[in-house]
Amino acid sequence: MSIVKFLTSKTLLKQILLAVAALVVLCLIALQGIKISTNHGEFETVPDLKGKSISVAEIELEENNLVMQIQDSANYNPDYPKFSVIEQEPLAGAKVKENRKIYITLNPSGYRKIRVPDGLIDKTFRQVKPTLEALGFKVGKITYVDNLGKDMVLKLTHKGKTIKSGDKLPKTSVIDLVLGNGNRP
Image 1: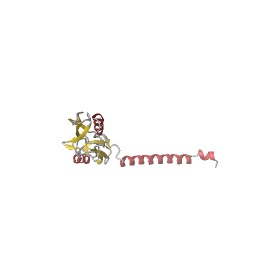
Image 2: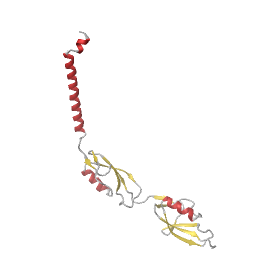
Image 3: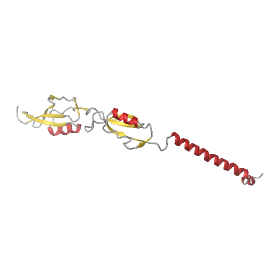
């Protein structure tokens, strides 16, 4: 039999049509299997967890068939209660699959402690104030005492206690300064 006769024969045509039909059926079965196994079209809505405690957030996520994953705590935010959710990913209202992990960031119990830098004593107020403010501290009451160095920082205090270099204070702490007034003692 010649190749031309074979390519135009009914037997080859039947075999090609059967192979194409089998391929189409297999693709349809595979697509239906994927649709069933991935719960295609079934979504859960992510609840708004911001400002809620860990236990409340966990209950809400369980009710929506979602899983809580605590990422980390961030910088303290005074607008939210301690140990409450301040960020979440995916955002509230997003449509996600069942058992999806919702990543949350918690508000710590307070500002982190920052070390008071070395070398602030015997520097001018103009040098010390920006240094303290850059670290997140606030400059509080300024008191002048007799000292030859005008506006020279003689002592740092926090809530009445003297602060030494290397002491750790919470961020946003108010530090009072004792400065020289330029008069001889």
